[in-house]
Image (cartoon, rainbow, N blue to C red; front, side, top):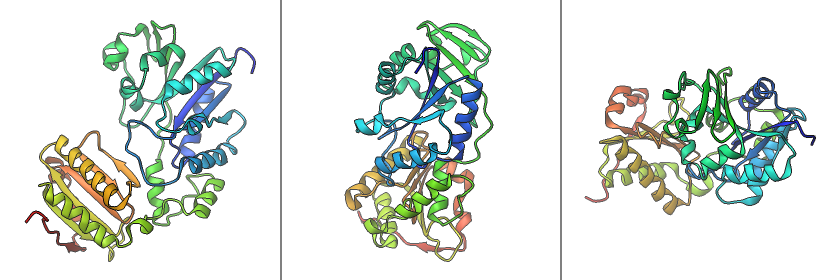
Length: 341
């Protein structure tokens, strides 16, 4: 690689890789003037709970199949999969610094990730080794001044100029506005599970691989009886004194799952704690991780997706606001029993 090339780094789980990734990378490649972008599948994000689903090797293969149709500017980098264990961005940046004769590396992150970057391993070292490209994300606004930056970044600013920041480390941060992505990997996984057509959202080669490998199907081989599994979840939550535990048999309805459990905690922290305890209990009893997990950090509305059973753990105030149970008025109630009584 000749000196003068600008190389982007875009990491993620790619579970699965989809057209939203492609659109984002094509826009960033053009707007930031990058020569190449290394697409780096992670083994395990240390800030996220493990999920049931494809192995790291399968996610790597899907990424290769997807990127193969995107063009030679996009390169699949398997270093994090080869390393195994938790994936740390600083290790990837350092490795690329050794291998690539690039003027500069550009780490590509969504605006939501900029907020949490201070939780990453050696985050201050990252911004000495690479520039940042921050892309827009629905629900997040670009900063208009230094005062609107995350606290950890304010102290690093040398000069702030509209959508460009010079850092004291000699690196810079560039903000790039993109078209809102209308699809997410979690949504695609749900659609595949209920056999909804996803050909508009994933490359044909990836869709074929998913079907051939039987990915994202409900974990029936581990659970067996999902009605009994749902009872286990509900009974466990009752034993933890969560509020108003209710179960719903949705098999007579058109729904993305066969069963649902709804409960709530007295605070956002309590709701998150209930969800974490339930996931631990399920792992111990069934050796099963969720297929999807949303809202655990906030604790307002935690959704634990086990395929045929979906558990909703609310902060009680938020539960009253959404009244999600009304969606299932035509379903059958599942009566849980408090195992402590």
